[in-house]
Image (cartoon, rainbow, N blue to C red; front, side, top):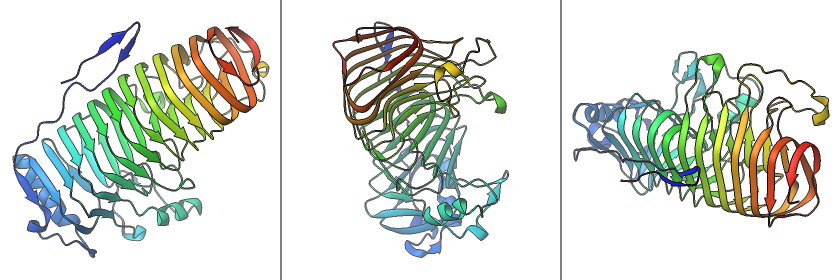
Amino acid sequence: MCCLVFTGSIALAQHTALPQIPANTFLVTSFGAAGDGKTLNTVTIQRALDSARIHGGKVIIPKGIFLCGPLQMYSHTALELQSGAILRLRNDIANYPIGNERYLNFISILDATDIKISGPGTIDGQGQNWWTKYTDKELQYRRPQLLFIEKCKRVELEGILTLDPPNTHISLRNCTDVYIHDIRIQAPDESRNTDGINVSARNCTIENCDIRTGDDNIAINFGDRNKGELPQCSDILIRNCFFGVGHGLSIGSFTSGGLRNLKVEHCEFDGTTSGLRIKSARGRGGIVENLRYSDLTIKNCKWPIFFSCYYPKEPLKPEQDTSFADVPFMPVFRNIRCSNIRVVNAGTGIRIWGLPGSPITDCYFENVQINADKPGEISYAKGLRFISSTIKMKPELYHAEVSGL
């Protein structure tokens, strides 16, 4: 069992409990599933999951290619993909199941406790056909996500490879006690909206993962007020992860519920569009505070450090925005610590853009070394301090209180 350990005002956030799964086992081939890559196994695999719903236990996918449609998992259930097992999403879009005006997600888990998905096997979304039709505007509904997990408690994802989803790989919404570790996430950099992990959670650890995809590698989202969603995120730890192609580690852009206590440490970014990214805007913002980024390497990145209160539409220059209006759901970014970070071969060194009525405050950079083609900008910021840090070219400052550069 893990606990929260506080260092100053920042929590070393971790999951606090693991799922407890009964010892029963359910082999999908015993329910009639065939791993020949041709048979559609939706009914038979769902039958195994339904049996686990009654008794609790582990549903096993053995070696083989198991073509399948949307599935539902329930409490006290584990899904194990053994070595050589491929759970492959059907891609016959014309016949694909639809519900609630969208194409159904591949594996959905709702309002459940004690859930685990593990093993060296693969969950394959066969996304290319979906991406092409989406680009050509031939899809009628929103594309399916591979794993959609909502309002669940004690969730563990371990060891699996998620591959080429039609949309997001893994979405966790308003969950508690989440442990994601030693998984691989892969999709081409040109694939549309294939976020690696979208997470809204309390007590969450993500570690030892390799994420290379076409959108945010990890996105922490917490609250779209227009949809009545105001979940709070807190106590999240991300460590020892590799971020390849993708849009980096993002917070936002919907931040209305608030984020407190995030720690990111010992990670490497190589070829991401952004590295550390916090994004929001007037009307979709909330309090984002107590963040610590440490011992990171960021290479070949266009925007290695990008904190903006103007997403998705930024002014050409911050002086174009003169509004001090305090509107509902203003973004507030504060108490951010960045230490022992090395940035190599970046496009723009740093961009920190607060708002006239809501500056970014108390942001510290200690032993941060940035080598970039362009210096970047810092605007509407207070209490920014650089300690033993260097940026190849000094960024432009506008209404910014900065020391140590």
